[in-house]
Image (cartoon, rainbow, N blue to C red; front, side, top):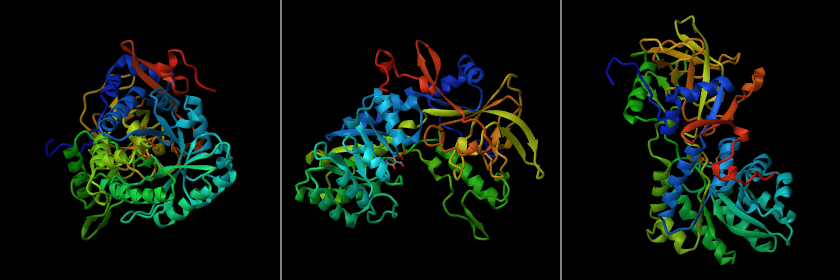
Length: 483
Ligand SMILES: Cc1ncc(COP(=O)(O)O)c(C=O)c1O
């Protein structure tokens, strides 16, 4: 990086995805066939992510179960891939349950998390699906609905750990004893398997403290003869978006400078990315903090499992689980989807705003590639459309969305692209499979929902299959989807 070069946020690209994008014979026919905008998912990248988590877990003494958190992406290709890989699944709605079953998951490999109403609980009772109970009402309702002929497997979700933010989910630590009492009173209908938590933070120490607390609560369960066998540590393993931590830090430094009026102008209008800007300077936590992470999910998992537990004489999380014959369950969503998807947009036109800013209009909206409150803090790739790439200097633009809303800017930061985009050029957003593809509210203007297409590499070539039709190799070799 040179002092005069424009600020840049180089994205990490998975090698397979990069190879696909670099191969003109691969991307061009997909765009011709499916048009833009289009979401592309890469099941093989998902499998690679899974293998890395598995190899960490295999190296510990504890038994384990990986439940793919379906909510991260509606993709049929990804949920079928998870089923074909023989893992379990975590679903959070009747529709996800149906999707998981259709993908081939047996009910015994399905766990339901999140708050559930009575209709959903009624549908779950008697199926053998594990219910990760969110609250006491759910537990009591389930006890009422359950049939002793088919007791419901149950986990309790615990929350409110010392030093953690209060959560709207789960049973507060002091209320767990009452829940255990209810379980002990209905052991003919509810089969208690164990405790779990899901923390909305990447902090490892916080997770380890939660494990310590859960172990104390599991002892209370044992004292009631409830015989737990599961410790569920939830999801929250992180994604790695950036390929260059130093450049990311430099970018953020220059962004903060720009907010005080120094250097390149980098923010649209009066936006501050969540920072507080005043006479004292630029303070606070920006809305894009997740993009700064450089610790891979597998490394984070390894660190959690190897962490010593204060309440257990310093033995590691994995050791204590193994010694007590507890299986460790985890519910990774974004860690499995990391780099398993990209989104391709088309450039419609470029215009200049009253303040001289250049706006490159895309054929998608902001919330097609990111939750609206998050700024995309990795640079998209600009690819030439029908015309070859021109020689040019990096040009700073804001990427504008297609909705008739002032706020529909895909980036509210200046993005420097290698040339001034032209109508028909393509803008590729990296790493969008983790929650970014399906949170869209952009149907407001009756735009069609972008198509999802699975890309895989078979017999020496990339193959594109509509997401709904994709079958992982093991399934397409003979098994048909369960209907
Ligand atoms: C209970 C539960 N488990 C797992 C997940 C998946 O989390 P992540 O995508 O961070 O791995 C979530 C996400 O909201 C969740 O609520």
